[in-house]
Length: 380
Image (tube, rainbow, N blue to C red; front, top):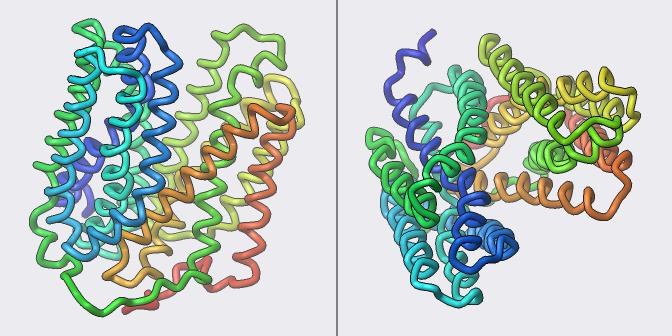
């Protein structure tokens, strides 16, 4: 497999995983910090909400900036700013700063960090060939599962050395990510230009809807784990079983997609989301819950990969960072909406929202079938 011998890809992968690691560490890291310094674990939750809101607000402007200066150069400049913001936050909390000050200090690193994933995703186009891209995105999704699980575990380990240590570690990780930004893609990255190409929004909407569906349905599973297992009369510890099934299925789906190495038809994966959501909602006991979760997990990686590949084909070269930053924001908004639904709707209804979103996305691709089979780039 050519991808396994591509050192540029593995450098990119190391950099992007380090860039993602602080986001997976932040929820527990902020809670540990505020509980120890202010006595309020709720403040940590509020700080995380402010951080995520800042990421969503800053994602598109930061992506637009990366497109103008070049994603590689921009990432090298912006990642240290994220690190500096986290250093200041940890220092202020350790010094006993008021709660409002801590909430305000969570905003700057969030504003900058929001568009960095889009910049890294843009660099992937200059790191692997178009034929390798579906496999590269799938392998990345497999590694991401480890980062999602490893972030909280790393915080728990570091917290034994002090409440501010996990946040300081987040800052160090951001600096390490800056060191691993692929240098050899700078020559192929978009250069500063006065020409402003338009993003084909209508063509991108089906793929953005697919990413929104992933966030929406996954959040109803991940955030609603406790009520899902309690509905079956099981103890809280049983949530670990569902998490293991979801992660294992997600890794398996991405691995199978990577082994195939082709773009594939997203309508198949969306159909899996619809069926999985219906099964989880119906409540057919443990067998139904685990089968539904496994089906959703199997389709998650491939759906994200095919959406990402097709978005790259549609986005103008000089606006890819902005476009991918928008895509990450759309997916995050789906996750946020699903989390909100858990708090205000009956549990059985929440997975149906994700299934409905998958149906809408599938209908969009039926109306425009050529977008579902990996057509040539409209910007080439």
